Image 1 (cartoon, rainbow, N blue to C red):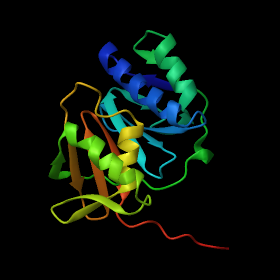
Image 2 (cartoon, rainbow, N blue to C red; image 1 turned 135 degrees about the horizontal axis):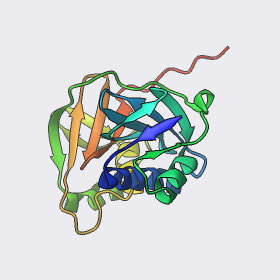
Image 3 (cartoon, rainbow, N blue to C red; image 1 turned 90 degrees about the vertical axis):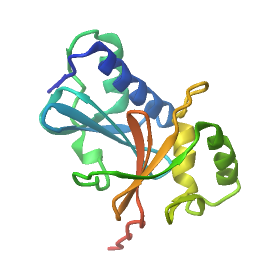
Image 4 (cartoon, rainbow, N blue to C red; image 1 turned 30 degrees about the vertical axis):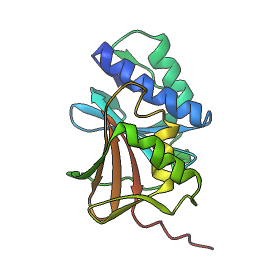
Length: 190
């Protein structure tokens, strides 16, 4: 198994996001998908939302799930364009991913307003809306996940951009994002 990310800055940015995921959940797994010249990274969070980011490069096999802490160690310890991301644990991935989506930005939350929205989220149930833009209601869990990831970073005036495609919503901060189904998946009992 191989993860190739040629740029040192891209490897560092990927390691930063994986490190934030591991801080939230030390047992997290990440899914790496080859996207034709880029690698898309997906990870679940304790908040029931996905974290995603990407970097120029490729991964083989083209769709694999690995333990986040193993990937973090590989990216942090080995300073090379090509690393072994760890053993495949594909059976540990749960949930859907959005398809190839052209995300349309429909609203922004200024960085200085995030704390106020998080304060409202702290008083709300996780699925209660705490922010709305263009008729899209954002549940508390999404904003709490943004804050849990440490975004936006102190002193960085990067706004949170809200996008949607009908079925999914996305809160983007820089090159990373929180993604969630707009309607929760149904639980099937057998």
